[in-house]
Image 1 (cartoon, one colour):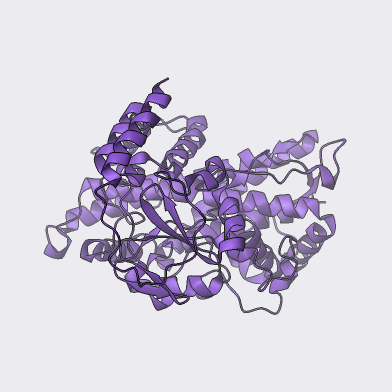
Image 2 (cartoon, rainbow, N blue to C red):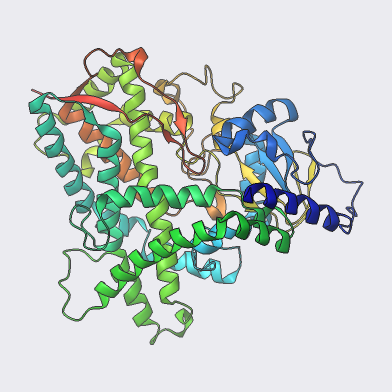
Length: 505
């Protein structure tokens, strides 16, 4: 009944407010093609109920073009579905397109835009990102955390070895989430995933999922005039849900930071990211150019790492193992390579990653077919630009469908097929210079955590493929492996991947 009343209010109030909306002054502009829209809600009904929007948008783009204008309520959104159009957004017009829209959920999770991922473009964001890249995400810092990644992967191998002795199936989805969470929590927070006194390990996965779910929701505050949207979100309980999740995340971050500030706290063998940023605050007394850094900045950046860092690496490894399990010959090929290159070893190190060329092709192909975030975080234009000959007004939201680009038959032969060898003689890479493959984005807004994520994915897969052969549970065949997706912000394998590890002899 409350939902019906909310919708009724929305239609009545929005109808009255729409009478006062000014018509566009630039009727001569050539706008992108757009599907027919309904009054007030625009094209929201064409998003497939919010499930797997990358697929719904891809289907629409087949009819209306790779640069397509939609209206989510009163908000114009341009969907980019080709590498050429993506290059014009992320390279040619990067400066004009590198801001972020202010949305209800992202404002909450970023501590009112004190972070890196969601803050609009400007001098404060530039200083924040420059400092964070230098002090937190630089290659030197990533390498300094190498022993954490190696140790946690070694723990994973030991756990899987116990299951191998019992010849019992393993929930690889859960195991790979655990290893990435262990790595991120140690590197960023100095927290032991298995024994954290601040949050139970089973709650971490649920909290990441809840944050992503709320962040991906299209709220009325983001789609309709402010007073109308705010009222509907309040009536529907959206504000309450968002506040509850933000409070739980904030409580966790507050406890961890307070623990770091305790006198006489036992120092880890490495300085975690909280240590680094607390030291940066202390250094502000000497360097007045840093006087903007506060505890809210630390919590906002940590929230970015918590949400983006934990499950994206796990998702990539899960999809890679899923595709290899579906193709035993391909699994054998990559295992023959890694074992032939590395010989007999008791423990894998990151130095070994330089020797496994075919494994890197597997990772590239996984990013193409299963990008963990199929829709890059939205951008917002700061000026009038042209994309593929179309006029894009200022304050227009841009959404790049990197999954759709990975499905483009003009670029990829048999795009639905998992085939790492398509990259064998190809220069295409995923580091932001090639717009055919954009799992981390590109330009000023490229994901700063890319080096850390890649190191985690490659090392995790190398351990799985070197130490174990993998069998399907009894009674299953390769055709029984489900590849259905779930999610909106990030897309996971809906049915957990279960395989039986067999210790290599």
